[in-house]
Length: 154
Image (cartoon, rainbow, N blue to C red; front, side):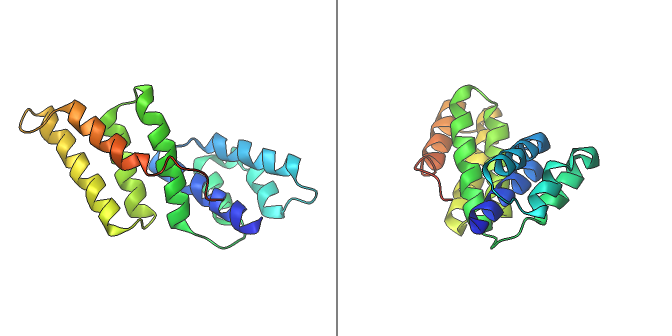
């Protein structure tokens, strides 16, 4: 359970840092962990009580959650979240930039980072009328993020 908690903590930490998630989401998660645990760790309790410390305080509390860290897995979970948001009509450019930020910050494989970078560049080219269309870029981003639609890593 410790690894799952630390990966989830990283999911929220990176998600808040990049702007995908709100810090209140992490507090709600900590509250649910406390409800489900017989003896929750002090770090999870500290996280649940960190709202008065604001965004940075919540991020500090997330960094203190014990367990083995795996940024790549946390990043894949964030890319899965972004793949779920794409069809909802969220701004394509925002999701593309967030996906690229996740890929770099969470040390995703180089080919994924380069593919997301190419798609992000393509959006700017399509918006300016230089090359391609927004619909083509949306499809490319959907295809790239669809690899993360298969299940939970934790």
